[in-house]
Amino acid sequence: MSDGRCRCAWGETDDLLRGYHDREWGVPERDGRRLWEKLVLDGFQAGLSWRTILARRDGFRQAFEGFNPDVVAAYGPREIERLLADPGIIRSRSKIGATIGNAKAYVAMREAGEDFAGFCWNFVGGDPMLWEGPVPPNSPLSEQASKALKKRGFTFVGPTIVFAWMEATGMINSHAPACFRRTELSRKPLPDKG
Image (cartoon, rainbow, N blue to C red; front, top):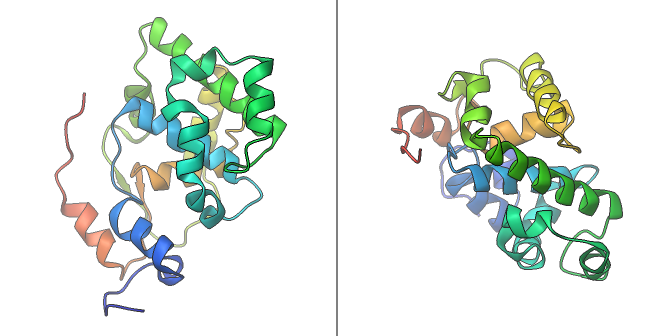
């Protein structure tokens, strides 16, 4: 049921997506661990709808122990089998393997002194980019970010996944021109989370 505010069309689909759209999608995220979690979830979305992932997000958080990269990086065959049997997540061996590998890449960056949040936000010069015009499935910017992530050992981070992730985490504000969130997020001061 609409409340009279203009939203991105996908944000009017149902209550779950409306709540996500209104409170989370496109809000600048500056916490490295949360950026990593969202990247993992966008990787799991590949070939599926975002609603499918969103409806199982709590299951993912439980299955991956709060998306703690240090814990996930240490997963071995026993944990993989546990995850493949977990009905609360998408049971894809390749996506589970990518999550473990991406946790290892995240930890390696940190151990090398490279802050994941700083690395990510550097692609947009540290501030959200207001997207003008039609929104493509990917862009030269997401291709650049995808290559940089792959160079650091990340997988399941193609340009389309990365573009969706950049939108979700507020690096790119691609809310529709008439959407009330576009204006709100354009004016909202960014929290300094280091």
